[in-house]
Amino acid sequence: MSVTARAPYDFVPRDRVENFHGNQIVYASWDHHLLFAAPFLICIPPETPFRALLDGPLAELLKLDPDAEKIDWSKVEWLKGGQPFTPDFDRTLADNGIAHKELLRFRTPGLNSVTIGR
Image 1 (cartoon, rainbow, N blue to C red):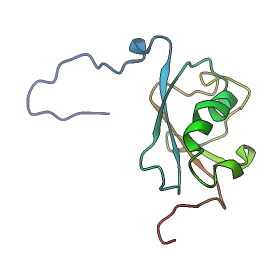
Image 2 (image 1 turned 45 degrees about the horizontal axis):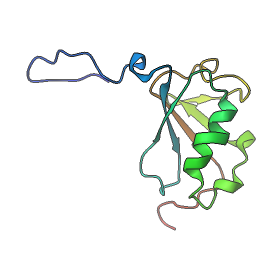
Image 3 (image 1 turned 120 degrees about the horizontal axis):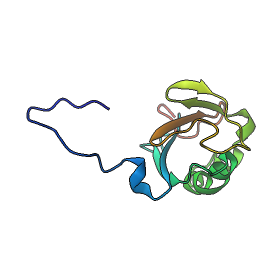
Image 4 (image 1 turned 90 degrees about the horizontal axis):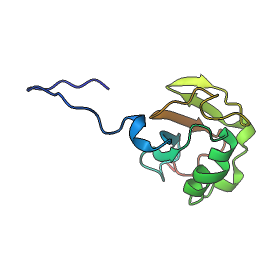
């Protein structure tokens, strides 16, 4: 993200991947589910299989939503960096091109339990 500053802005960012001891940050956001106000921040090794991200930390974070147990991950629509993305569940995050501080958004058509206007 670029920064416009009124004075010199010279420092080394502290959120570089080198500072996470072999892990990386992945953001995940469930579109049309306003129970979660902002994307989740997950700190996880890039060697983690994509399926392990879904079955582990993401499942734990989502379980409060009434639709969480109904998710059919094979039918989820994914966006990575705002572009359509089809992950390989059996390959690692790195193999799927998921970099440090990447935002993954996902949509579950038909499962929109907490939306505006309900």
